[in-house]
Amino acid sequence: MGSAVSIDGALVDPGAASIPVLDRGFLYGDSAFEVTRTYGGQPFALGLHLQRLRHSCAQLEIPVDVDDATLRREVREVLDAAGNEEAYVRVVVTRGVTALGLSLEGEVRSRRVMVAAPLKRHDPKLWEEGGGLATVAISRSLDGTGAAGVKASNYLPNILSLAAANRRGAYEAISVAGGGELLEGSTSNLFLVHGGEVSTPPLSVGILGGITRRLVIEAAAEDGVTIRERLLFPPDLYRADEAFITSSTREVVPMVRADGVPLGDGRPGPMTRRLHAAFRRRADALLAEERV
Image (cartoon, helix red, strand yellow):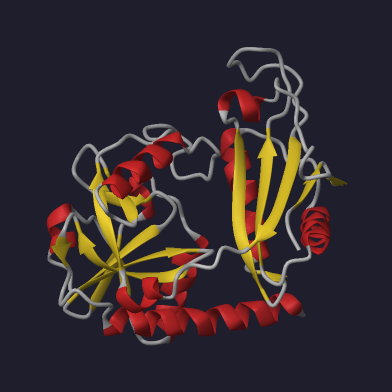
């Protein structure tokens, strides 16, 4: 059990794995990536993640030189090499090595890097007791560009916003746009509940279209719950009866405080638990489909 790495389809020693220092992914964060987890050793929603990876690369004008069958095989190989009961898997496509400078002109040979590691086990108290949010006004790396909302690797704004939230005693940071709109977490999407109505920021504000976000919306519809995509602002957060965040590795996580303000009765609420259960049913169905 442990970590495993492959580069352009070749397994390499994780302790010695390297890419050239002139790779644009290293120099500029010029790459796209996806992260998922396994259930019973099977990578979750891999088809959806690869679809989003290709979309991100297309928006960033990074070619993906292999087909999905090759990507799936390489994911399977790195998972098998790591040998974990349950794993975290990261797939990165960089623009590779080009002439120095920011210009996109010239020949591009992209590079694939895959990493598998043991899945982090979070404290169950996070789901039993809930976590806290902190709003952070910080510009994200792709805000205001044509590629806003893609999963690019330049996560320094996310790192800084999460650090700021953690210093305030919060579990997750929620970025706030220049107009005051709530956007997303550093590694998650945000949902609020008001009087039984569930809402989440729309993709049009430049947030990442999270895979778990998408599946929660689908699962909610199957369970008879409509989730509205609408603009949300800090007062909406503070007045929420419930709040939760979603991500591929953590599923649905209740949030019970925001900037020190208790949400609802300060405990995980019934809608959050209902939608988490609905998500798990949707996830089981998707895993069964991908197993066929």
